[in-house]
Image: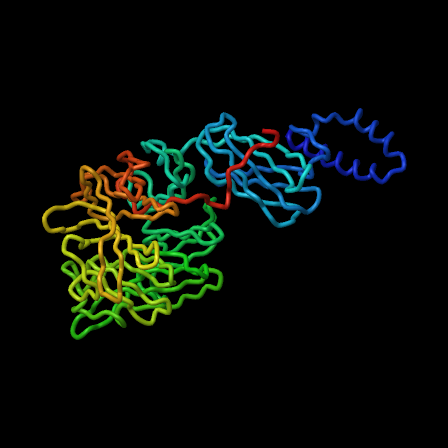
Length: 488
């Protein structure tokens, strides 16, 4: 290609100049070289030294919204890759590859459909010029093209990861920015939870295939199969989260005979994808009792229905048990329950007006604070969904409401949904059910609200999507940061 030829010329020029610097006739030689090799042959930009970037390769095999850039250098060095739409319709982003290597492979996240992009690569040291190439993204596939995301306001974090449980044509993970789809990983059937590991890899929970560790380009790296012959764990379901040591904690059914009944409860398992090991960490049968810790919706075949786990600031795990209308805190060493909230055996007192019903997700955003997505399923006196925050006082044995968000007018989302606390103190709340689905009112929407309850961002989704599991706002996907092109 013309760009490839230009880069090879630059690499040769760089090599020749290095030799000239060692020559006793270097002044005459430099003049000859300036006449023989035009500066334009090295692409855009000028600088005191040539570019050490010999070539940029762009791979589009992973789909219309993902590109892998291969940067080859004339000598081993760290590199920076900067990219953005040429018409200015997307942010300009920079990814830094810090290791010193001759060749770097960099995945470019957050691309938009049908755009012309400029990509620059340069060695991360003063005086280095950038080598530039352009590429064009493809159109969205038919499963995504009809989807519309209507947004107002501005979110605090630019990117939203949306787990799609149900849709007329698409299920899987959507990456959304500025009200546009900026990436996706399609999963056949449904997506019942996902998490991001420290290196940016994604873990997806698939009802049939189990846990799938993938890169953003869709490459499958590791897989833990769904339960079956030879697996110690039961059916994997409803949630998965990365641990502080970068292993993966997940919920799986566990079945035991209690008296004359066969009871299906829950266990937490720890998976190390690299080592291929799976170890049970916690069992409901060791810390809760059937039927004393059952709820109104509990049956022997689905006692607790765990549907959310997350790590608290002390390393404890908070877990949502929907069928028991209960949340528990598991000690960091998994040896005991620290407290139980909700239900007839609650260890924390809770006012009737502040009870949650059929909740879907829970986090402990700060020490002694509990944030719950309260679906309001079978709520006495009327159905509505809210995010509610409690102050937990284990010494006094109380849980006291300190904050809540209810939409106006009320929205009822009978299933799924999430409430996520952001670093600036705002909260992103997802009402994840399309109107008419399982009695839900709709609209299928997400909002970011301030502690005072003011809505600063709102997203409403067109009916091609019917159930959204959770929304997770993030600042970046692979460490990309706001950037600028050379000379701009």
